[in-house]
Each structure stands twice: as C-alpha cells, then as structure tokens.
Length: 265
Image 1 (spheres, rainbow, N blue to C red):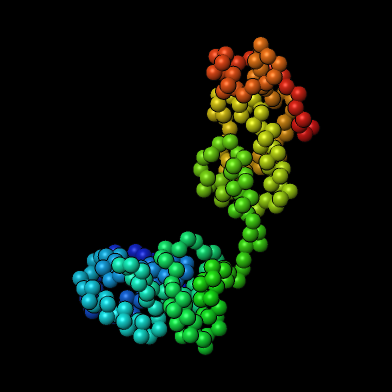
Image 2 (tube, rainbow, N blue to C red):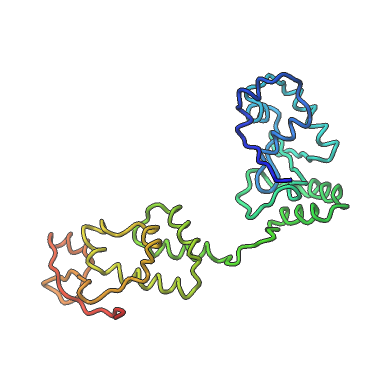
C-alpha cells in the first residue's frame, strides 16, 4: 500500500472540524503526531494541545488529559515535565517515519527515566529500539546517509569568501547540488579571489558582482581572467596600492592603472 501524508491543515479544516463526535485517543494521536519534532517529541501541556491541535473544537482540557492518559497506558507516548510545561515522546516514530536528517530540538531532552521506559517498552522491537537509541544519543539512523557529510562546512567556507552576502538559502541549495569536493572548493575560492580584483567586481562598490547562487549555477569558477580584466587604484603620491574605499576617503577620485597579477591563461 502506498504511504499517505496528513498535513497540519487538518487542525483548522472547517469541514473536518465541523464533524460531530467526542474526542477519542485515536483522534488525539493523529493530531498530536503532526506536532512532534524530528526526535519524536513535542509539548503536550493540555492548554497548548487544545489551542494548537483543536483550535476549532470545543474539547476541554479535561477531555484532552483523559485521552493522553489512555495513549500513555497503551505505551504510544511517554510524558515528562519541565518546569510548568509538559512534554511527550512518541517512541515508535522511527518505525513509521523515514527521517533523513535531524534538525534542532523543539523540546528539552527527555530525562533518562523516560528514555529507559521507552527502550523497555520496545525491547521486543529491534527497529524501534535502535531508532530511539539513535535519537537519544543524537545520532542519525538514516539508512541512506549523506555521502558528503562535510558539505555544510564547505559551503560555509565558500560563503565567508564570497563578497556578496545575498540569498544564502538559494546559494546553499545550488552549492549542495554541485557537491564540490575539496579540490573543486579550492578552485572556487581561488577564482573568487581573482574575481574580487577584476574591474567588473570592483565597479561601483561591487554592484555588478553576481549573486552567489547565480555564480554557482553559471559555473563561475570556470571563468578566465586576463591582465586586462583587472584594475587597481593607486595613490599617486605613494608607491604602494591601497583599497578603493580608502582611496576615495583620502583623494575623492580614482585613477585606473594596470597591475601585474598571476592569472590562469
């Protein structure tokens, strides 16, 4: 049978919420399951559940508490308290959901007593026990792990080097699509450093520097630069070069001069 997806829109669907009938533990299970994070946890303070999962229903907090007790008795969730708030974990989430990556927790970590209770309840189910242990220890049980686990660190290196910090999400998406190894990343960085000295990238305070995603999609690291593509700004009273912005502060205008640079032919 194909898998089906239930979305959070059921919380506020007028047609669905106009259906009559009492609150059952099964209904609460479905709606609460949509609120859990990648670790199978969510807040289950009764007032929070009522406002989040049943905003169009007139169920009372007492109704919700009774159904939570029924779910806990069936080992479908386990609850713990942290300050004035109550949280729960769904121990069988790993059996029914294929989690490719883990994002930031939305709840405090469950105490050891809750983790132990979950492991004990699932002792006869190896798949669930392994998934729970992985979540508790912060490991990713993904059966198809990312073959390039350093891609995030490489992107951050690219992002720090690229001069125009715009549309980071689109840039990361393009970068992940390319999946550069260390050698290709080094080529990208070297090309960016050369491009930073080019006339186009220096013109009008970098106005014509492409967005990083555009540069990546266009395979900008393959661009070639010749000596004629470069310009620098030289203090006419001194020998050494200075940065364009500093030149403007001191002298008010720029003078284009040729600069010998090492570029790929």
